[in-house]
Amino acid sequence: MNKMITIKIATKKDLKELIRLRFLAHQYSAKFDKEVVITDNTQGELTKLVEKELEDPRIIYFLACKNNHAVGIAILSISEEIDQTAFLGELFVEEKYRNQKIGTQLIKETIRIVRKRGLKVLRVTVAKKNKKAQLFYSKLKFHPKERNYILLEKKL
Ligand SMILES: CC(C)(COP(=O)(O)OP(=O)(O)OC[C@H]1O[C@@H](n2cnc3c(N)ncnc32)[C@H](O)[C@@H]1OP(=O)(O)O)[C@@H](O)C(=O)NCCC(=O)NCCS
Image 1 (cartoon, rainbow, N blue to C red):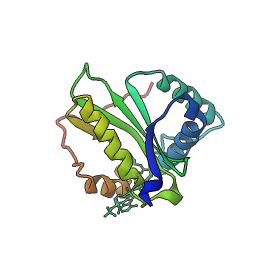
Image 2: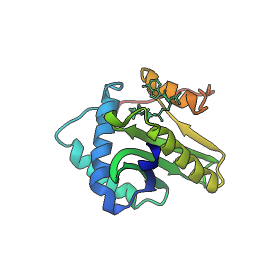
Image 3: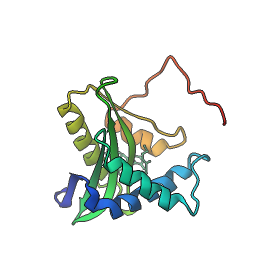
Image 4: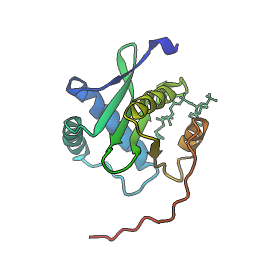
């Protein structure tokens, strides 16, 4: 079954599919984070964001395709200048394609590229309530990291 899955680095040609998957990922995040909202502008804002990020050399969009149909996305940020850490900003597989190791393949390809760049750590944040994703990452040997800082913010 996995033979039909390919993971590729996306380009502008994939814009429509990237926006579609980002929108679905955004909808999914809204389930866990009340600050993530879907409005009439969300589609347009995501379109601008994806277009901008595709031009950014620090950001890599991976697409998982099954029989040439895009079914999953991973978004990686790399900024070598700052530290030895890469950040996975988004990982999403369409619901009906889950549990077919597509997420695993996206992570493996992401790790391959991160290693190739000489970086040592891949970091991801997961909503506390998203237990399923925590189990998924734990199977791939991602471990929770206690930090000596907390996240602070000020409403403006
Ligand atoms: C998390 C996600 C990307 C996993 O992708 P996937 O293709 O379904 O995962 P895989 O088939 O590669 O699963 C790998 C392992 O994780 C486990 N796993 C995956 N989804 C799980 C779930 N819902 N509950 C428990 N374990 C799960 C699988 O059991 C599998 O273990 P196995 O090797 O023992 O069979 C996918 O469920 C998803 O898109 N979820 C919604 C978005 C999300 O939560 N993203 C992560 C937030 S950063």
